Image 1 (cartoon, rainbow, N blue to C red):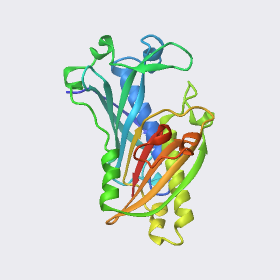
Image 2 (cartoon, rainbow, N blue to C red; image 1 turned 90 degrees about the vertical axis):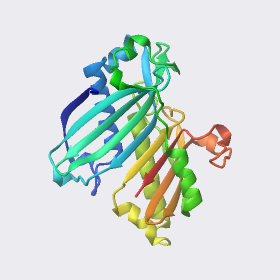
Image 3 (cartoon, rainbow, N blue to C red; image 1 turned 135 degrees about the vertical axis):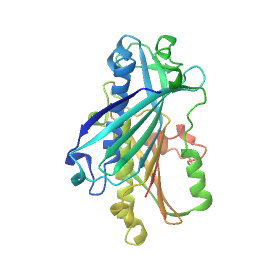
Length: 286
């Protein structure tokens, strides 16, 4: 049976919107959960980076809100996290987390990261490579899967274009400051969820009067978030978030492309990714 780590996380008001746990807060809890599983069963994050010179860069992440959980519902949640290596030659690390509240599992996340061989500099520079045998061998047989994890973002976007109605689009700008970054002055991936949420709110504020149906995206809770990260943002980068709102049946969906502003200004239709391509694509569904 795959090993798990289980513990309680204390809740406070800063983690919530009026209707649910904030996506950025869930991202932070998920990163902490994966780090805890690695510490419990393989090695600590510090040891991984400092002694093994291995890092992980997050590539794909899914968040599903299963049952309602609001600030007044509970003092804490139960956290259960599992992990496994996936793909040929242990080329991915997949971490799954459940947060359980009074009504059962409130949130599920699944993350796929790519191992990096670090050069040893302070910027934590590295190149993709399989997990070293010494580390891969610490995963049990039932924590190893040869088929790779695949991101759903491209298929989701194609479905919105094919089956949905585009309601509105717009651009929002954000600067990457140090409180958005991790120790190497690269953006901390969970903060990009906040950039996307902010861009959604700005789009609704701009177009909600003419399109009342959009206003539901400010009041109703999110159902799912799917993300793929293609490049890493750096301290002081100016980002442009290109947001498009779609309606498919009763569902509202928001697609956010996070571009380096100087790349985005060169053009690009969002499909061929001229000008270097987006750094990340976030899909939110209401």
